[in-house]
Length: 217
Ligand code: G3P
Image (cartoon, rainbow, N blue to C red; front, side):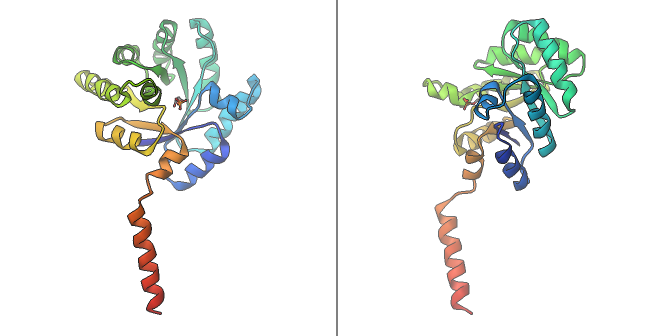
């Protein structure tokens, strides 16, 4: 399972990269705004900065919602760095754009996936990744993990090469559940990744080992 971090914060990306377990980064317009990154040139430079930190794919989202606009923006973003994957929203013009990008060898991540039908359509158009938002489904009392399971079944039935990038991860159990089902990738905050390491018996055990070692000196 690949681990992506879902942030545009350079310090957190550096911290995750330093752990040695980072496979990529996802961003979105809200995450860019949170870091105060605005204006075409600054946004592009920020994507390049992220690519220079991480060894792996970096999703950069288009803002346009019409086919021509998405193609123009996506081509500009893809030209910034070989690690860039163009993030396209799940709308019909987005599907058309994904098909176009796929024919040009430009990799895409279809975002805002909330149903198996949307995932099927994006895979059919040739998306490299699809991003089901499981946390946002959980937020409205709908089973986000069940969606990942349904998409896994559909993709396996037809041997789609599109990778399932489980997004909107909120906590470590989301990551574990996605791993059990076979999501190809998860993207989440650094806090959810580091929380995987925590267990009270590990802390108690380590404390005892160190105390016994000190007594033995
Ligand atoms: O980047 C897309 C997705 O991961 C958003 O997550 O926490 O805003 O629902 P969240």
